[in-house]
Image (cartoon, rainbow, N blue to C red; front, side):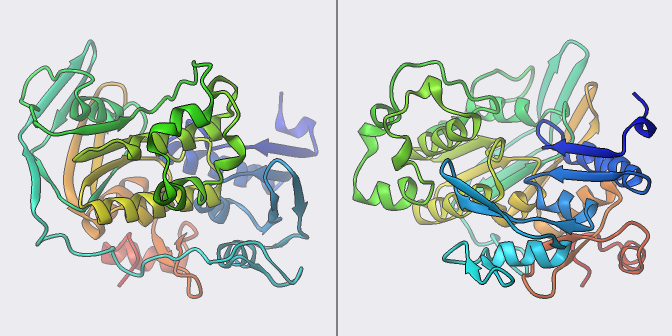
Length: 361
C-alpha cells in the first residue's frame, strides 16, 4: 500500500529484533515519511526516539494498574525529564532517583586481574563462518558485545558458555559459567516463587526482587509470563547462579526504558561486588554504554562471515562501531546521556573530521 493512501501512520515498537544498523535505517525512512504525513511512534529505544522524533509524550504510572500520558514536549525536554524522573509541567515525580550516565568510560581496567585469556577461535555453519580474535577477560569487568544481526554475536556467546563447540581453537576455560540465551523459553508450569525459592533471602530481595518489581509476579506460572516478565526472571536466574563468568545475550529484549536502566545497574553492581566477569551482548546502545567497561565489536558480512575486534576500551570500541554506522554521539548538557547528532549537522561534521564519533573531546 502506498504511503500516499493514508494521512496518519502509527508504529508500535519499531526496534525489537532489529540491530542498531537496521534501527537507524528504519528511523531515517520514517523520518522521511514524516515530512509528508503525520506519524506517531511508540518506542523504548531512547537513542532512536532522539534521532527520529520532534515531540514526545511521556507515559508514566503503575505497570498493569494504570497509565498517564502527558502533553507533548520537545524531544530533548521530554527525554531529559523522564531520565530525571521529574515531570515539571505535571509537577510530579515518577521515579525516586534519576538515571545517571557516566561522563567517561566507567573506569580503567588495566590493573584488574585477568580471569582468562583466549586464543583465536573459528566456527563455521554451512555458508557462515566466525573468527574470534585473541583477547582476555578480567575479574570485576563487564565486556559489551555489539554489532549487526547475523554476524556471530550469539554464536560467540554459545561458544564461551560451552553450548556449542568451535570448529577450531580451544575454549576449555575451566570456569563456572552462567548463561542467559538470546531466546528465553517459558515452558514450565512452575510458578515464579517456586523457581526463585532456592535463592530467596533478605539480601536477594534487596538486590533483585524489589528493584525489578518481581513480588507481584510470584504466583504466576512461568508459562503465563509476558516477554518482559520472562526476560527479567531469566536475567535474575542467570545472576543467581554461582559462577566466575556471566554471559547475557540480549538482556534488553522486551524490557521498557526504566527496566533496561535498572538491569544495567543491577548487573554492574553485582559484577563489581562479586568480582566476577560478565559478557553482555545487546543492540541497545544506551544499555551497552551504561554497563560496559570494554567492548567487543563484531564486523564482517551478516549471514556470510563475522569477526571480533577487541576487547577494546570504550572510546576505541565505540569509535570503531559508530564509524561503521556513520553516526556520531554527543553528551546531553544536562543529563550527560548519549545523544545521536543529526546527520550532517555542524557537530556531526566536526566530530567526523576529528575521527571522534564517540563523544567529541
